[in-house]
Image 1 (cartoon, rainbow, N blue to C red):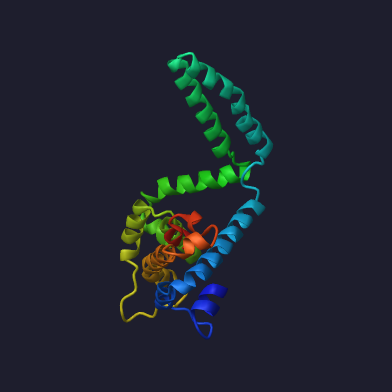
Image 2: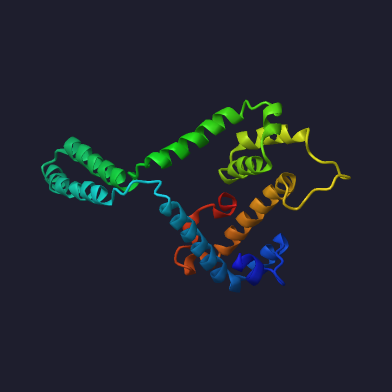
Length: 222
């Protein structure tokens, strides 16, 4: 909020065109990536505060260091020409290291949330219009932003089908905070943030010490 409304915008007003102009100036890249890195860290801290993943740091370290025990065998197999054994052992070491790096089991709450969203993706594809109309505006926004955030074309197509019958006409009043206003600006805002992120990588990504770690942070972040 500080970056968008105070640094990029003016008089506490933010416009997506301001974002484009701001990131076109290379002098602003470091500032943009610094703020984005801080925001990404804040999101991570919020996720961590809900204990969605089990703390398996000690277990992962033990598994990772156990691969060291196999290193002498790699050299011995190579020295004595046992190439098949060398390749098998090398693959085993790599597998152990990868396993130790990515192993992060979810807690019961984390697994439940992941399961609920997975079920949502399955059910939403066949969701009838009549049921969708019964949803609250907050639930519609949540579903729409989830699909936008994970770049799901299936969810986007379904949303297009559902909102077609309910989209206000040009003569209807659309509140700035309504679901339909989010639909109108969502893809444009997502594209703008993604373009700003890509533009900032031309210089700021290498200077900010973590600016490029977000990958496609523009669209996913929105």
